[in-house]
Image (cartoon, rainbow, N blue to C red):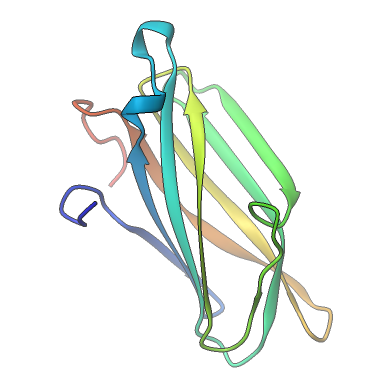
Length: 137
């Protein structure tokens, strides 16, 4: 998908950049059954001078009715990637909702070689079915 069709959402915490590109998965969605599915691609870039390991993730997923689902667990997609200075890590995942739109945001816990753990923001991003007015800028 081009950036003209789907916005890229970005956040930076302690020189760790997180970019998210959401996209609607029409072939997996079934609006008549109140099932709406999105995929999202995430790129994490370590622009700092230290190595970090992504050890934990937290997601807050809110549908258009305000119903919140929280996802909390180790790593991402079964991995706990280590990022040296200048490295990037990319993965894709998905999210189903019962409503045509919603919002996701969260944090990653990063751990340094010295044992310090700190949170990195995942930017809030909008999940909107085609034809739905964008909720989040």
